[in-house]
Amino acid sequence: MSYCGKCSCGKVRYRLNSRPIVTHACHCRQCQRLTGSAFVMNAVIEQAAVELLSGVPAAVHFDGTSHTAYFCTECGTYVWSAYTGRFDGCWFVRVGTLDDPDEFAPEAHIFLGTKQPWLPVPESLPQFQGGYELQELLSRDGLDRLKAANLAAS
Image 1 (cartoon, rainbow, N blue to C red):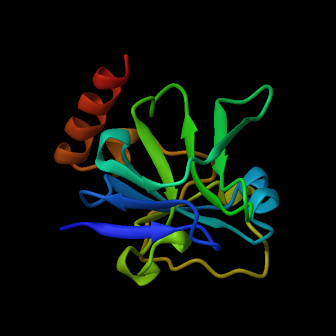
Image 2: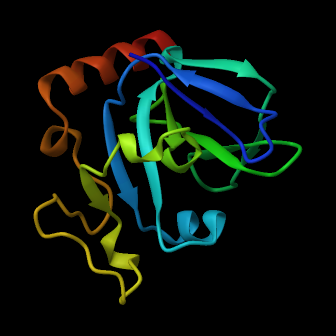
């Protein structure tokens, strides 16, 4: 199964050739600032599973962080990010850029220490004040996929 997405103007188009390893809602201040919203939905997936169909997003690295964001050069839509370290071989694809963003609900909420106070978070989902320990959230398959993606990126 594949899942297609694009930026707002359609210049950058992509396809996810597998389901994400994990999907989470990030409430950190950087994601709030970049999206102009209360949080961002990330579908964490192997870089090799993301097929760029058209356009080339521009990379912007944030000094002092492990974060590089990728934007459409035409409309500025933030399509995905890369984080060095634990996720070297993955993209954090913005779920809202998918043609069917309803396909992937959050499996966890992270960085709740900076969550907007008016936003309720379902108690039924795992919650983390900061990031999460991989073993706390990912399945065995997810851990194996992440390990293989990181090895492929090194």
